[in-house]
Amino acid sequence: MVPTYQRALIVGAGPGLSASLARLFAAEGLKVGLAARNTEKLNALAAETGAVVHACDATDPGAVEALFPRLEPALGGAPDVVVYNASGRLRGATVDLDPEAVARALAVSAYGGFLVAQAAARRMLPHRHGAILFTGASASVKGFSGSAAFAMGKFALRGLAQSLAREWQPQGIHVAHIVIDGAIRSPARPDPEGQPDATLDPDAIAKSYLALLRQDRSAWTDEIALRPWVERF
Image 1 (cartoon, helix red, strand yellow):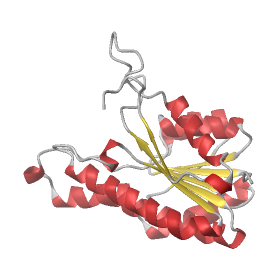
Image 2 (image 1 turned 180 degrees about the vertical axis):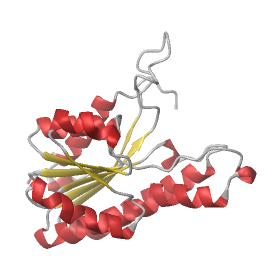
Image 3 (image 1 turned 60 degrees about the horizontal axis):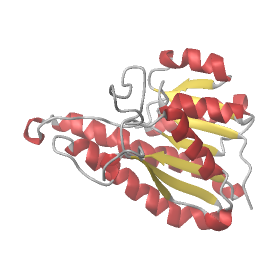
């Protein structure tokens, strides 16, 4: 059986992958909600997609719990697709990192994912229906020099996704973690000259998220990895 989804919430929304997801979900007939700490950057996207926008700090339990009832009237109900797309990026020599900044990065990358998934599942589980998708990165599976905080957060998010898949998939909630193993193309970060397809097209990534939502529940995927076809492993 292929589940049918009606309402999507993207947390950590911005102009890149989140925008591609919002456009695709809206084109597929889903009502879309967008949440971010800074909502001004979402005005044009909301106008384009008809999305509902609310400010939310995903690391604040009260803000996350308040987000859902605020969105529900405009969406026509609780979201049955939730994408956690927030990341706490912090780079530098580990001995020089500010411990408070590291804690903040971990909170954004992982703790916020827990809070959003918990609030979403409380609404999905009674109906035994829904999907929760987590955006990962190369750092989800391999740590790089100068990127300890980002790797810690993304490793934690992956562990969260694996645990939730085992806990909630038997109850009808599709949980999946998507490893974005490469740079996402944008106007500020195009493919290098002479290297077409060196980066991932955000619209193509969004189609993979949609493909997850279209999977028959008899054969759900709980993790996929996406990378440019020219990547040398």
